Length: 217
Image 1 (cartoon, rainbow, N blue to C red):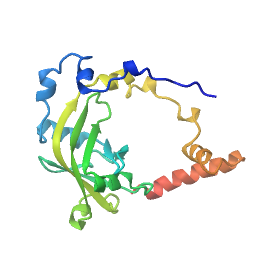
Image 2: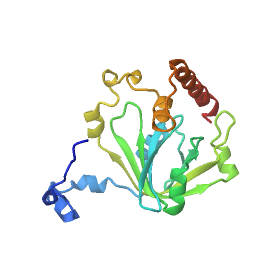
Image 3: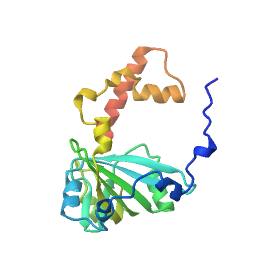
Image 4: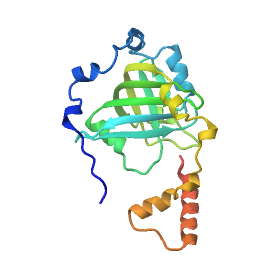
């Protein structure tokens, strides 16, 4: 039996007042840097970013974070208060979009390869299938089925500490993916079971890679 972990109730932090008592006061600049619109620097950050994570919440209150990626500048800037994110083909769970329909509040974290700082955007979202808008997001002649339109309430650049602690972009810290089972191997192990034959696994891995090439857009 796995060891049980017991949290001591006397050490739980349960109020914001107790939380803030554990830390120094927020620096004035950390508050002042939070904008309610995109300025020239945040616009450039969006234009340079090929990747973001979007956080949403289900009707039951369950949090979810999903990755989004495309060539640099894939997130369009409609105006100083509005961003548009194309929704590319995925596994059709539709967690993010279903959550937005139930609760429009979203949080975005933009990343730029090589940058240790990130950019955070908080706001509300809607889903559109406007054909004229989707036509501007075509890749290889293929349009997204929908796009997520984010109305900005907060935007600010986040400091580099997390990325520097993790050494995320440092090639010397990159790990060998082959040290863990392949994605299809893991999914089968968690669901229907892994085939006994290594050759069957290799074929399934190859089929998945071929699917990536055919269904990327």
